[in-house]
Structures are given as C-alpha cells and as structure tokens.
Length: 248
Length: 155
Image (tube, rainbow over all chains, first blue to last red; front, side, top):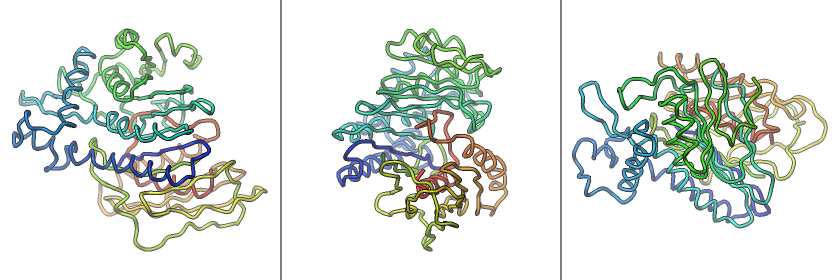
C-alpha cells in the first residue's frame, strides 16, 4: 500500500506557479527513490545487491550513502537499529527501508526549504518534517497507540522532525536485530523529535526496540528528545518534552 | 494555506502508486446541498502531478449539513471511495462508499481499517492540529479518498 504524503505550504506565494513546480519536484524525487530502494521490486538496486547480482563496490552514490548511514545508525543506537536483519537460517538480510523512509523525505524536502517566504510541513505516513518561521509553530499531535483516533499531546514544531515507531498501524512488523524476532512488548510506541528526520526515524525505531532504556540514549544525543508510551499508556520523556507530557 | 496530497510508492510495503491509477471514469465530487462552511484564507486543493482532483465547493456562509463524496481511488485491491458529512465546518460522519471486496484479504483489511478510520476522521478534528505523528499509516486508498473529500469541503 502506498504511503500517503501530504505537503502544506503557508505564505504569500503558496498558490504561485513556482510553488506548484517545487511540490511536483518533491513528489518526483520520492518516486525515484523507489527504483533504487524498493525491496518489492526484483530489479531495484537493493534487490540486486541482496542476491549478489551487484557488488557493494559498484552501487550508486545514493545507495552507497544510505548504506554508510545505516552503519552509522547501527553504531549510534548500540545495534538496536540494524539494516541487516537476522534470518531463521542464520544469514542476514539487508533491508535499509527503515532508514530510507525518513532519508528520502528529508532529501526531497530540500526543494521546499528553498521556497522563499514559505512555511512548509510534510506528513509522510506518520513522519512529520517542517519549518515555521514566518507563522505560528506547526502543531504536531502524537498519536495514542492504544486508540488511533485519539492523540496524547501536541508538540509545537518550529523547525525539524517528529518520527514515531510502534506497532499500532501495521501489527508486529518491527524485528529486534539481536534476535530476528518481533520486538518485545516493553513499549507501545516511541516518538523522537529533532532536527533531522533521518535520525529521528532511526532513533525512534531503535528506541522502540530497546525499550525504556532508550530514553537515556536519546537524551545523550544532542538536539534530540523522546517520548515513550508504555503498555499501560503511561508516558515518559526526555527533559525537553517534560512540559508536553499528558497529565497522568 | 495550501495543502497537497499524494500517495507514493513506499519501500516499506506493497507497491502501489495511486498517482498512476486514477479512475478513468469521471467521478466529480457531488455535494448533496449547496451550503458548506469554507476554510479561512485560501482554502485547499489536491493535485497529483497535473490532474486536478475534486472541484472545491463554493464557499458560503451559513452552516447546513452537507455530504461530500471523494474521488474514487484505485488501489491494488480495487476502488475505494469515501463519503463524509460536514456540519458547521466539522466532519460529523465518514463512511466508505465503495471498498474492495474481491478477495478474502480485502475483507480482512476492510474489517480493520475502515471502521478505525471512520472514527479517527470524526475524532481528529483538524482545527487545532496540523499533523499527527504515529505508527505508519498504510490504508492508502481510504486515506487518500478521505483527503480529497476533506479538500473538497474546504476543511
């Protein structure tokens, strides 16, 4: 199923032709990403790499860059984010999708960032990225993982990203790289706020895998804050988000 | 403010590009009554690389209830179309007019996704929130159709 992606532009030129062109370019950029990274296409670069039909030395600059980011992500998260997932037979399967999602949107958004006199907001299947300099901060609600029609709190976003990882929407799709099995039930969701969507996404995914101990890890990552929801619906957060946590 | 929506192929799940699957039979938005509370400045529109979606409803004062039907959107499991009811500028009801029902998996998806999103639509009133961050939403056909209905209603 496709990921719904919406773009909101606010400012005196929101309806200008140039804005049209920029948004079209944004979407075209996202469509391009699929040709390289889709694990559902046999002819994508990732698929070729997986089955040994393409050498690691010969991958495109984009894929090479993503693989480098995946290595950094694994180190940053103490292995809780890992693009090489263990399989039942003991081998490892490459799947950088968890990092590509945020990275692709963030890179494509460079075009939006270049719009003059414009505040903008991108929502891509639960990931949020935006800038609000002229107008009021964007109001980004955090979904209640126990009831997707409700929200837990609202975070004001001036410039940066909000990413949430959890199993509410798609069932137990997240695997623990240490075991190759579905993640333990220690959290319902993990939300990370920070300057980069790529890293907010990585940290949120890793936090969901790691559990409550991830709070200290995110707190120690300069510029990033986290909000965790435990199985009882209780919320804990890093210092910067304390004021936004819902009252118990 | 201007809002544009498009679903795009994702590396994380099955591959469907809604942009490429627009229905060929014209299904303009139908408005049951002529009175719809319009958004403030600018209103909204939906574009997907060239094809204009629903015709925006004419802004007017007064707040009767109106029903807006979104575009039919083709998904890999078939067409999805959503109808919403707007009263005083708020969505009061949302329902799926057409849902895919060709195979067993459809029933499984529809059984879960459609009722959840109906409620979500009504609860998540857009007035004070610009976006919701949550676990990845993948019910593309429904969301896109709802969005086109919302955009048409000028919410």
